[in-house]
Length: 134
Image 1 (tube, rainbow, N blue to C red):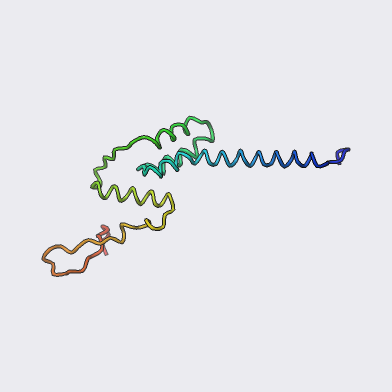
Image 2 (image 1 turned 90 degrees about the vertical axis):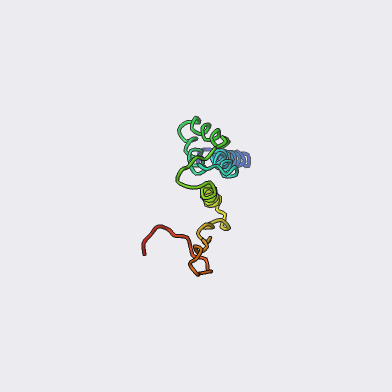
């Protein structure tokens, strides 16, 4: 083929180079996903954005990845005027469960029920109102 025979050491060199390439790719994948895994574990309200920034941050330069890594550890005070604190905490838990693929938490708030208003005569709970007219 090339004028010489390939022996055991040539194949060992090829196998070592292939294993080194696989190790580099696995390290890259582990490192790129690290900020997202940290944010999910810390129940960060912007965990999805941290996860995406971690993955996209290592492509062109390392600076966005560093920002995502810092952001994953940043303590967050949630100030959201659209929801009360318990509703916001429940929404964050659902997002974290969706990102972490935890089937126990998917749609957890959708199964909760609100009690009937006093004086309505109904003792059975009614599902929460979703704002849509039927």
